[in-house]
Length: 363
Image (cartoon, rainbow, N blue to C red; front, side, top):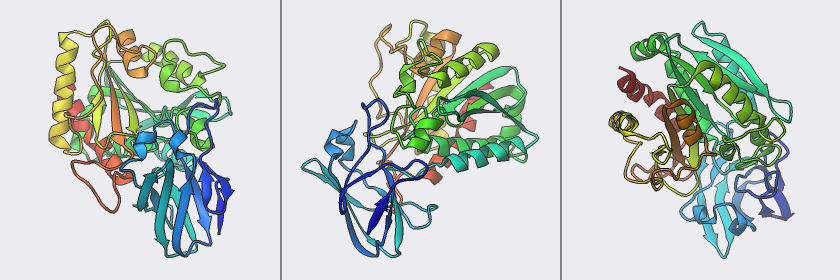
C-alpha cells in the first residue's frame, strides 16, 4: 500500500505503514484538513491519524465520518472513530486507488473552470483583483447591472471547501438566462463574487491560513500587502463599489447544522438592520429546510463584536447587513444522509436557494 498527498490540496504525512499525521498550516498554528491518495487499497483498509487530538478542533472528530472516493467525483462517508486521541478511518476498498479527504475537495483546476465558464457568459464579467503571495490570481465574478451592490466571498478558510461548492451552485442559478427570479435580481443588484479568497491555502492543503500563516478572517481591521493581500485587495474594491449586502460563506467543523452568524455586536447595529436580518433568515428557512435558526454561535453583546472578522468589519464600514453562513463538515443533523452526509450537491443547492431571500430583502 502506498499513501501520498503530493497534489493540489493534498495534506498527510506517513509515519509508518497506515499510521499518519496531518501536516500543519503555514504558521504552525492550525491543522485539521487532510486529503490523500491510497494505492494498493483493495480489501479492508484501516488508516490511523495519530495527531488528531492536536487538531484545531479535536471535539469535531466526535460524530465525524471521513469522505472516500474512487473517481474524485462522488464522495461517500465511511466509518470513522476517535478514540484515545487517534482518528481511525475504516472502509472496504473495491478498487486499487482510493482518495480520502476531510470533505469533498474543490480543486484549483475546478476553480479555473468555474471562472472560465463565467467569463464566457454574456451575463458575467471576470477580473483579477489581486495576486496572492504564491502568485495565484484572486478572481472576482461580477453579475448584474442593478444599483445595489452585493458582495459574496467564500473560502477565507481554505479547508472549508463546501463554501466554493456553495458559490458554484449560486452562480449557476444566478446566471441562468431562463430563471425568472435570477433575471429580476440581475436587474436590481450588482453581485461581486469572490469564489476563493484563499487560493494559496487551498492548493497547499491548509485548514485556515494563507501562505504566510495568516487567518484571513482575522485580518479585516488592518490587512497588509505582506501578510494578507487577499483581504487588502477585496477591501479596496469594496471601497470603490460600496456594499449594500455582504455574505461570507464558511464551513463549521463542530456543529452539524446550517446556520448564519450575524453582526449584532457591531457599534452600528440598530433596529433597521435587525429587521433586515430577520427577514433574510426567515425567507432562507422557508425556501430551504437545510437552513435552520435554532442552533448556531452565541450572539455578541452590543459593542463586543470581533472587528477583525469580515462580517463585522464590512457591516460597520459600509453600514450594511453583514452575514456569515456556516455549513457542516459532518452531516445536517436535522436531515441526515447516511451515505453522503453534508455534500457538494447539498452545498450547491443551498447556494442556489439564496436567491429567494435576497429577492425578499431587496423587493
